Length: 88
Image 1 (cartoon, rainbow, N blue to C red):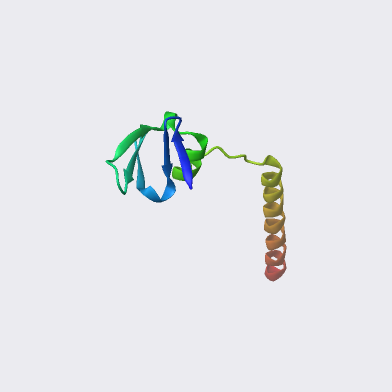
Image 2: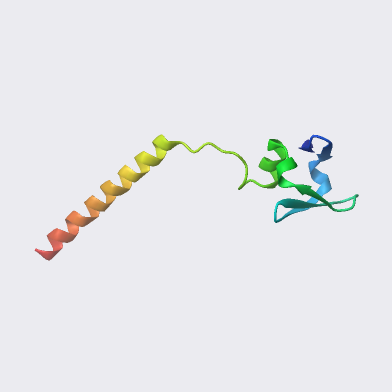
């Protein structure tokens, strides 16, 4: 599968041995080529998603987060009630 790393560079996924993030650039090591540094700003969204998943753009749904907080509050209230019964 070919991946567009920059607008001028397309490579096969299997050719990349490792990608190391150093500062604001990514060091790519390949099977059959010399290592090369690519600035993070030059990477395409496809390359960021593949090489740097923690930097890839993603949607953070707010509705689900609010529901999780509410369920945590309910669990805390449920845990407090049995403790009161044990003390009495």
